[in-house]
Figure (tube, protein in one colour):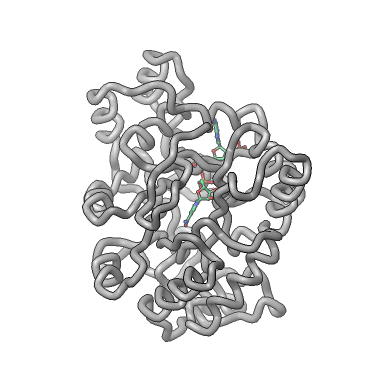
Length: 321
Ligand SMILES: NC(=O)c1ccc[n+]([C@@H]2O[C@H](COP(=O)([O-])OP(=O)(O)OC[C@H]3O[C@@H](n4cnc5c(N)ncnc54)[C@H](OP(=O)(O)O)[C@@H]3O)[C@@H](O)[C@H]2O)c1
């Protein structure tokens, strides 16, 4: 069983979870079921991943077979950009809960600090970034408005903890001024090519747990043919990572995950391969030396993969500018 991180909300969050982005609908139910059997208890989902119904079926099967109880699971989901207007928040949380077949989320995050015009789920779901064709339409909702709507979601018992994703320092400082419920977690892209140490310092100082996503760096972005991902040596084949892995007799993937968890971060690796699930989960039973951690952090190149402008041309979404 993975160690846990105590959140500011008082709840325990498993430190190692399972990522659900790009898990195909056709296999998502089996993948979640197999991941539960492999020992995963945290699942990181989102409206945008378009697979919450299927993931929920995997959960339901595991519960009905007595493998796990709902209260032993930690189910995370995220508010998509088109639902930031206050009156849209609760209805979409309820739809997402119905899709999963559960009655509360353990953690619900603002996926991106970007408000876009509402798209009715009956028109298109998940809505994606574009209103129609290649048109991006901003909404006027502020993060304060959205956060307060999420606080109401907690008060109604629909989510136990709330948090943020893809936020950077200035906006976090602002949010902390008005938050009655502080963000329990910050989920960010984090791998040795994108360390973001100052953001980690801020989160630590403010008692916000950090979840690292895309721990394997370019690996997740090759399928988009992202040129800066394709051109890099994959992290798991990087000489520094391979040498350190050999020293500890571990897989390079486990070294990449341990580099994060040993520094107190949570990780949510994704794989559809059942044989790899256990190796990603059970990587916390060894420690890297401080020197090796520093060496891995030294690979930092400030390279970000997950930003809208890497997926489609736009002049409107410079979220990390
Ligand atoms: N908040 C956000 O904006 C955001 C953005 C991105 C991701 N996320 C979350 O973070 C999760 C993880 O990030 P991610 O999916 O981008 O990438 P990731 O977990 O870093 O990498 C996944 C890729 O690595 C492969 N892989 C996994 N374990 C491996 C291993 N032990 N050895 C070799 N290859 C391995 C997978 O292939 P196979 O599946 O073929 O094994 C897949 O291609 C997502 O699923 C999602 O839940 C959140």
